[in-house]
Amino acid sequence: MTKVVVGIIMGSQSDWATMKHAADVLGELGVGYETKIVSAHRTPDLLFEYASTAAERGICVIIAGAGGAAHLPGMTAAKTRLPVLGVPVQSKALSGMDSLLSIVQMPKGIPVGTLAIGDAGAANAGLLAAAIVALGDPVVAERLEAYRAAQTLRVLEDKLP
Image 1 (cartoon, rainbow, N blue to C red):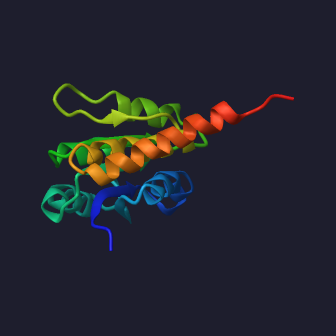
Image 2 (tube, rainbow, N blue to C red):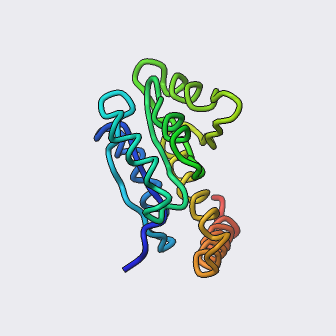
């Protein structure tokens, strides 16, 4: 069984359609992760407990996806010393720009690594989390290098009509 080292949290069940891309990448790389719905607005006590206990539970990095007001990544970062990667989930109202700006505009002293809006951002959050884990895990480092080499090979083998 793979040790859980990445936490993937999101504000609601509807965010899973985006956040599953982070889980898919981590699964492909053999990086242990957990997923949980943690709402900054509806379950603030759960958010504080999750973030403040993550390091002692063995989590190395947290990926937090949120849409709309998107307070989850920033509030998570405020309650943990771990790196937090924010994924803006595309919203209906402003196509994710509201989410992006809410996550990226953190005040000095509480950093959140902010990725692209939507599926690409979630997948890249998985890759970035794996890269962080790889700093101390040579097996994950090797898998990440192989993943990137395979990606390069696919591009080099592509043919145009």
